[in-house]
Length: 163
Image (cartoon, rainbow, N blue to C red; front, side):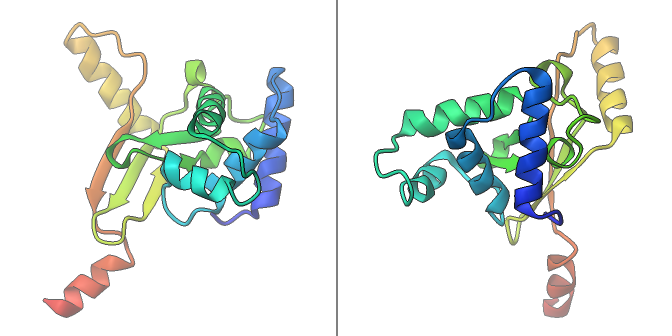
C-alpha cells in the first residue's frame, strides 16, 4: 500500500469516530498487522504476529477484532485465500467511503496465481453488471465479491522470459 500505515490507521480511527464506534488499541494493532502484511494474511498468521506484543492473545481475540474490522469495512476477506486485506478506500478516505457491510463499496480482487499478490480494485461497472444479471434471474443481490485469478504485472514478464 502506498500510503504510510500510520496515516491509514489514523484515517481508520477517524472513520470509526465518524460512525460512533471505537477502534480500540487491539483492533488498531490487528488492522496494523493486516496493513503491514505484503500479501493477504490469515487469522492464525495474525495471531502469531500479535503474540509478539500480546503474549496471551488467543484465536477469539483475533477473530473478534477481524469481525469488527469487517463490519466497519476496514478490511476485506479474500475468500479464495481465507485471508484478509486492508480496504484501500476506507483506510485512505475516511469520510468519503462508507464501506461498512451494509454500505459495502464495489470491490474486486486480482489474485496472482504465481506470487500470491492481491490487489483490490473498485469498478462500479462490474458491480452493476452483477446486480443486473442477478435481477434478471429474480435474485435480490445483497453484496458480492469478485475474485479474479491470473498473473500480476510483475510475474507476467517473468513467465514470458521462461517460455
